[in-house]
Amino acid sequence: MDIVVEMDSVNAVNLILSNDLNFCHPMAGLVHSCKRLMSQIPKCFLHHIYREKNAVADRLAAWSHDIDLGCWFLEDNPTWLGPLLLDDSIGVTETRIISSV
Image (cartoon, rainbow, N blue to C red; front, side, top):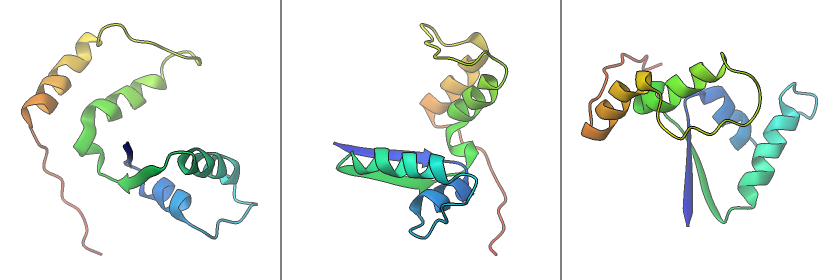
């Protein structure tokens, strides 16, 4: 089974894919944990995507900053997520202007 991890943080993707991360880097522990987990999956791929590509995940991540720490299980999608889920299911896209530099 292939696992594709998509992240909207190009810095995080570059850190995880880097082979020369200094152990003194403030994120070194987290990066090494990610690498270790990925190495346990035979076909695990990590890619950068723009947040507009997965607005549902972006909105859930933003929402998570306003809730208590812990493990949360959602039995139903929050009502405020409905429009984004509908847009995602029918392929609605957002335009984004990016720098070519």
